[in-house]
Length: 495
Image (cartoon, rainbow, N blue to C red; front, top):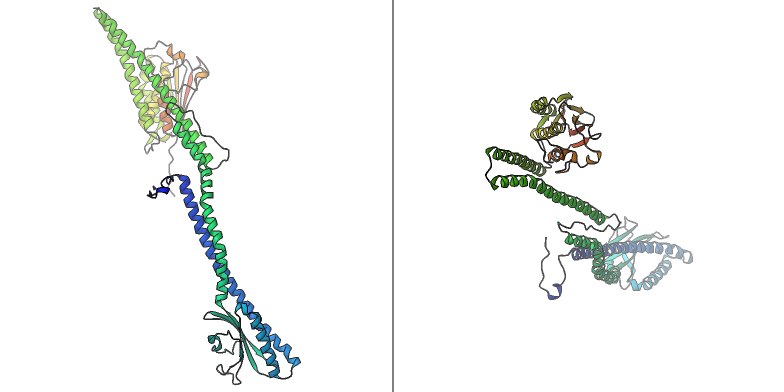
């Protein structure tokens, strides 16, 4: 989604659509949000901790006052004298904690035990009215309470004479709130400083992070269909961007090979087409140069017709190759029996083999049921048998075999002939388009190949998820073509 444009003059030069600016803004927003959440969490946590600590401190103070009364009794035998000493101690405590606004309240419980009978013996000047009017719950020995805007602790003191005294020590919440506010104002400039530095640091980090992408864009901008030699630099960090560079380089290698193959294919196709066209043109030019006999014209027409048949086959092969290439990745739902395909193909070429006294045998082992296009698979077997017939001398032998490898879930078809064979150095290039070994080019057979048969076979077999290979011990020792196609997986029904 594009970023909205802005009409602010000094913001116009900023490349808002660039990745580094977007990363900077997103990182800054994330840091700002994190700072606000952290500041809020610190404020709430400190406030809660201070209030809990204050309550525990107040509770400790009232317990200390209760212990002080026991210390006063040995020095004074009367309750009144001990009480006066206790009030003096409370007055000193309230005065020493004046900066924290502590207040102290001393009460004497009623003899009847009622709550309303308690009377104030002494209270500090800053003791709030609501604390003075707070009733006594004599059922609880000590308690901590939050009343209004104050927190206080109260404890029962049992004297030796049986009188009940209650002491309250507390402080207002605003003292702690002020401490929390002071801490907040102390942390706020630090947070603002981090917020201001975050865009600069984020932009620097985003610039470093996107630098490899800039190299990718620069290299991609230099790429042309006629010049695909440039590659992205690998930094050796093995991070996502480095893996992206490796992946793009691998893709560029494949594209470069594909472009080279297409260029070579066009050049080879032009070369193959130019020969028959030149032959036809020369024959027709000679025929039209001067009047000739009917037999001479007949020969010229037959030569032109032979070249036309060759061009027709070549054009059909090119169309078939283009059709197979455009249908790569198709999903086949039709079951095909390779054994039946091989038998039908052998029957189609049986008359030709018999005419040339070539023995053709068929051997099938197992159910070679595959999932694929029967028409295209028949084209593969036909091309292989046709090649075997063309390169096998009269009186030779061609063996077709079909077997299954249940462990690997594969069907295997082999076409073995006793023909001329292929040189070992030419086996790897046998499936290249328009490639023909010199031994094949030098033949004087009437039926010529266009050099696309094996290329078509490989494309069809690979489309079916299989593989094809050619093996030959050498010239004069025959050739074996092997086609391997995955078997159809049959889903077993539960018993």
